[in-house]
Amino acid sequence: MNAVGLQRDVETILHEAGHAFHALAARDEDLYAYRSAPIEFCEVASMSMELLGNEFIEAFYPAVEANRARRTHLEGIAGIFPWIATVDAFQHWVYTHPGHARGEREAAWLKLMDRFGGEVDWSGFEAVRTNLWHRQLHIFIHPFYYIEYGIAQIGALQVWANSKRERTKALKEYKRALELGGSRPLPELFQAAGCRFAFDRNTLKPLVELLRNELAKL
Image (cartoon, rainbow, N blue to C red; front, side, top):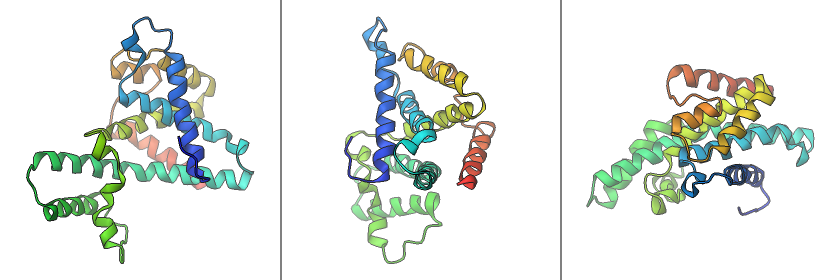
């Protein structure tokens, strides 16, 4: 990770620590190839650690600043879903329209920005908005790798929700799931962590309500 003296540094160190704990948990797996899980679950490990660690960030901040940091983090989670949808849809458009012109690409991007983030006022910053996809390095070096973060965030929110109900059980399931590495199919890894591998209303509604309730406290 890189540290530049911002709140995001704290989120990043927790995130990357989740990956590190995942590697340590799976290190005794006999089959080397099974020590690495699918990306969709690797990011559950890291994003869950962000949320679990944020319960204790008074180690970094005084109480008032800790709550401000928590709010920033939870607002970021709420905002990341439409951005993930925009980036994923844009990549699909790019690869299904070979030979397109720059203007067509810009128009396609802006149409997706309207679809997934149309309520933000970009007056005066239209040029920035047109080229905002440049900020996402995955588009350039990891084609089609970004939707995994959305899938994983749903899993991480479930781990966090479980910890709110019964922390010891939730942590035990989380650690057990990490120990499995990639030795089980993705839905089974989610299940081991106490999560549903599903994207329906029944799965998402309580997670959105949890986010809203926690933000209201802050």
